Length: 294
Length: 277
Image 1 (cartoon, rainbow over the protein chains, first blue to last red):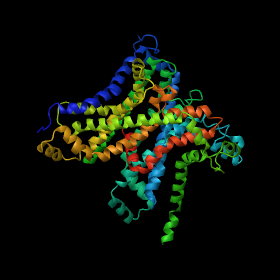
Image 2: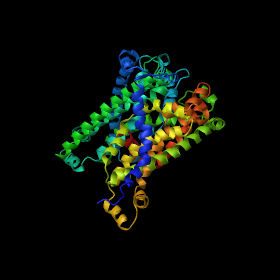
Image 3: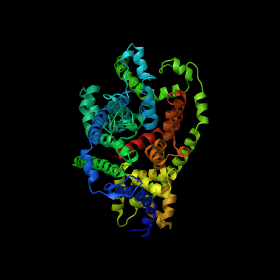
Image 4: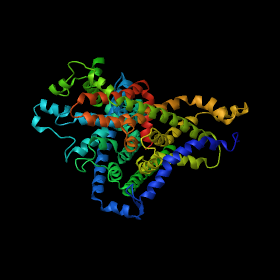
């Protein structure tokens, strides 16, 4: 039985659809179109076919960025999922003030990437020394100060850790709610059977939330494919290309080098990567749902 | 027996303390440093506590463009949040509670937006804004932020509407109310908590937004806080640490206040927002 008028759904949808299509859908189509063009933003566009895509394969800097992105992703997965789990377990283990602790643990997530990056620039600074190098000095390691944000060897890892640090609170919340949904009867049975606190986690809780851990891994991967703000602000991809990622590279190609055609092709590459990853997520969750209904 | 249990818990509490220090120290340090005088910053190591508190660093902010950045960010935030909440709810209602051709298709088109990274819209929007003269306007930041947030807002609203019984809406029709009246007088008030959650976590996103601002805004008068902060720190960074510490602290403060009051909404919303993938 339909009680509303035939036109009414579309009256509701009109404004949201217009804004959404103008802002999200049409730009995607335009980006695909631009990716076949040579265009510097001033002179006329010229059609170049697949040349921008072919360029990707010869662009050594892009390959550096992709490898950086891979390392960045691995560190983020290990840190965000690992520390997220640790924090969720800690919040569960303490008997008082869980909510306050959870709120405090979560705080870095709400601080803007800009403020967080500026803070770490100062914490990790050298000449003038930030807290880290001042502490090294204080314990007599003044000769071994580290240029955390200007080193060819470690800067990529430092930036990755700052990014991971900022977002690990999200997975605290994910795992915390996963733990609370574990059936208490199962846990009681385990305790009666003599399992200690450690075993409850390794034998029961972690295996039970395995699906959530796997999807968290994929979510972190998906997040780091789009990672932009922390490396862009903290080191601007430097020194050299050592902490450059796919997204910051795309941005620089477009807005610094004015190579909008190639920039568009790179943005399509990032979309493609994300779609593939999300395809995997959907497959996995569908399988998990089917498995659950058996 | 009791003390034995307490002793066994000591490693856990030590670990909690350690993680707590790691999670909170950087923010604490910036706020603490914002009260130091420039002299004491030069003479003492950066981790030391301030010996005397000063508000000079904040006074100095008042003379900069910081107030302007603050106003710009608030204007952008208000219109963006209204847009997200209103358009998200408008889209969700027919997709959840009405029966019409193309419903599934439209829903999928919206859901597709959740996986689109914002980068893909930058170049096309940059070009359109240039043509229309929309760069360096509040609208240039409001529009894309609403557009990209609609899918998630809609998704959360639909999630809530599934719990609203159809019979409630049907009885509205039987009492002679039209669709719009039912939406505004029955459904919308019921959705209040969901809408507050959506507005709350989006506030954090909007307050911190950097990419659109960095791309579309170049005029100093139109900058938002995250963008202005970069300027501020860059401008005074080396010489005047106090000023930049105060600027960073002042930008974090509004989100901290919102977070400590509405922490459940922020945590759940931001987590859902991150998980949208």
